[in-house]
View 1 (cartoon, rainbow, N blue to C red):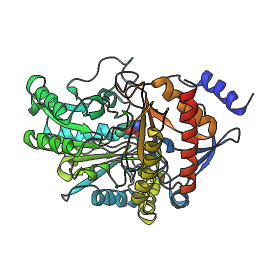
View 2: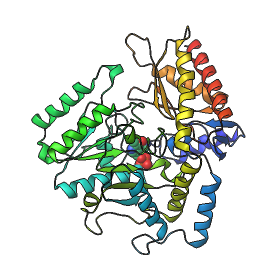
View 3: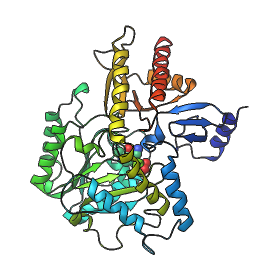
View 4: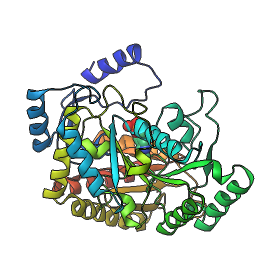
Length: 429
Ligand code: PMP
């Protein structure tokens, strides 16, 4: 029995099955490489789901955390605040889009940040409705799951959803939903289902993560901004997966020039330590009453130290430029592969910066989803030493989330593995 097999048995017996897991049990990781408990090496193109944008254990992050741990690891910000939190808030206020006065709160997970952004929007507007989009992912808490635009598995077994949470279709040209259609449905919703004056917020991912790396067209975000302005609705950008240099800009919303009222960040923010943030218009953030937001662990000092170092690394190592460079390499390689004879199942190849995905389809006419083939590609890649993840409403999208610090030769190595895996998976089908 391998170490992995033994751990899988123990996991099956001891851990909730609802917590989905893959079969790679980590022993150690450094930058873009990860070794499992049997000593097998992988290139990690999952990056802990877009968390390790600065790679595993970046020396600068490790030093910042080590130094902080010499001082204190937890005081609770509500009890004894600390400067690192203030510094990070100042950084986020200065670096998020919008030239107005901003404020920030820190929490721990993406879902928690989403919840707090909605609470702020509700407090500011005095309204309760929230509109999200089909295919969206915003977390697994009660409101987060309600906002998810996918029933199975996120809402499947969990009872009634909170009221006044609705979904408009996310535009998706490849699958026949135009920007105009999506806006028409949203406007119809505001005529027939909910009074716009009851809507506190519209929340959108600039690039849907779990939903399949669907990029929100800039004209769509502009139209949402107009609708929000017309009705006094808060526009919330969920940058949890797309933010922190991943798409070639610090925040993906910047590609559109549209400025949200509130922005939600997590994942890459602290480069491997649990931390999330809500940054936005000062008056909206401050609408929440004193004591109404926060939490015991919110803005953990070690995570905050790491996040402050992440900002320095992004700048020093030009990680936005790096994201564009790596993303271009991946896209051009995949597009060339998709052109080859026999590679018809490789459908749409898309991405923004180093947030790249491709669909696996039954045929190019219908673009029907091929989830089994997607599973085979991922398994073949794992076998050959590359960690990649599925996504998409129909489970037929492979997403690539390399650390932005991945050495170029490892990007090429990963792409060689990926190409061989796709070929093997297709010919086994
Ligand atoms: N929003 C988006 C866009 C996400 O991708 C995720 C996590 N995949 C979340 C929110 C929830 O984050 P967390 O898992 O940290 O609660």
